Image (cartoon, rainbow, N blue to C red; front, side):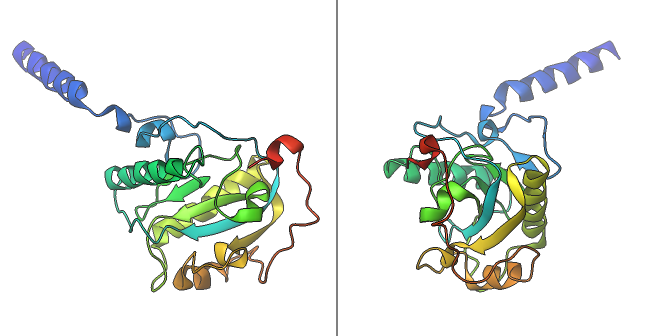
Length: 212
C-alpha cells in the first residue's frame, strides 16, 4: 500500500513538472467559462488606456482568420497568434476586449477596463467581443452565443456596461463583412440590438481615454 502511495505521488509530480505554464488553472471570477491572459500565454501589454465606465455599446466581431477553434489549447494558440499580429501593427496588445471560442470559453483580451482597438470611433465607447472563426455562412455554436450573453450580463452587473447598452456589429461602424452575415442575423434578434449606424459624436470621454 505504501509503495502504491509513493508511485501515485511520483506520477502526479511528474505530470506537474511537465505541465505547460500557459495553461495553469486559475479561479474563475465570472459566471461563464473564462480563460485569463496568463492561461492563454499573453505577452504583456505595451500601450493600453483606461476605458470610461459604463460603456454604452457592445460591438460584436468575428476573426474570419484565424478559423474556428474547439478546445482551449487551439484557441489559446490562436489568441497568441492574433496578439502577435496586432502588436506588429503597433496596437500595443490584442485589439479585442474578449474573444470567444467555439467550445464556449471566453478568452481575456484587454478585459473590461481598457480601451480596445477593434471598431474605429466605437473603441472608446464599447466592449469589443470577437468570436474566433468565420461566421458568414453559419452562426457560431450555441455554447459561444451563451457565453457572449453571460459575459455582457456580467459586465452590466459590474457596472462596466450600461444597463441600457446598444448591441451592434462591426459592420455598423465600418465598411466590413465582420461579424459575418449569419452571426449578424443571429444577434439581431437579441435584446438590446440596435439597427442602423450609431452616432458617437455626442459621446464624451476623459482626455486620457481619448488617446488611441
